[in-house]
Amino acid sequence: GSPAEAARVAQKEARAHGASEADASKAAGLAAAAAVAAKGGTPEEAARAAAEAAQAAGASAEEAAEIAGEAAGAAVLAKGGSNQEAARAAASGAKQAGGSAAAQAAAAGATIEHAGGSAAQAGAAAAQVACDAGASAAEAQAAAGKAAGAVVAAHGGSAAEAAQAAGTAAVDAGATREDAAQIAGEAAGAAVVHSGGDEHAAASAAAEAAREAGGSAAAQAKAALAAELAAAKAALATAQQHQEEQAEAHQEPQKQQEQEQEQEQEQEQEQE
Image 1 (spheres, rainbow, N blue to C red):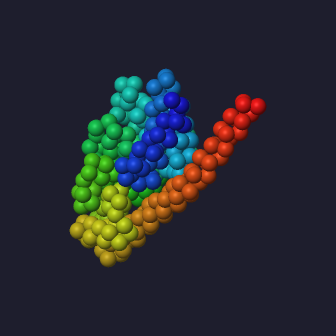
Image 2: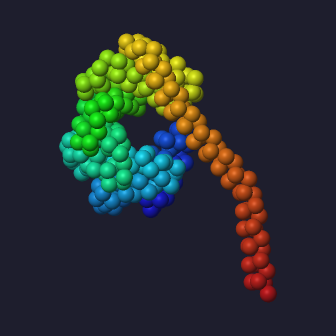
């Protein structure tokens, strides 16, 4: 089928299996990209298809850019490219789609994870890409932690495990203990959100992880707030999707009735 059809099917299946709206839109984008790549499309073409499909599925422009980058990286890996080549392609794909340094870094880190790399490797790649894209040292450290934590969460790791990986990656990228603690807390919160946790659970996990990493009360509070906002965003997206599904379900009987009426009219015209 077409990239658009592949995207719709992937999004529907992801939702059916309980995926968040963010993960469902990512599934849509990557499916569209895979359809393009299967027909001989270039990494750049796959990235464009991914961005368009992801946004059509509800992703923000920044999220779509990250997904576009992942699609470009996946296309390079599928053609036998090295992890480093794929990470560069991911960063380029995200940039071409209008993504920020953070989106480029996240795409590169995710690509390393798709290639079988470790959390530490994903974090290092993300930090390098962020620096190359003009991010500040603090932003690169945050990108490293986010990428490392995401790898752990993607493999079913706990919030505490995601936090530990994120904190280590941030320190490796040059973060202070205080900054690394906040980054670790945010990664723990993100892991809880990824698994479907609510705002309270995400904030609690974030604060606890930041405390365990040696962070001050301020670091704990900042991590908790970031986690709470992320959970609220995810909950809002889910609620909007439920409303759309209910609206579609309400309109379905009317559509069916209209189709039946059209068929009856066609039959009458044929008989005449």
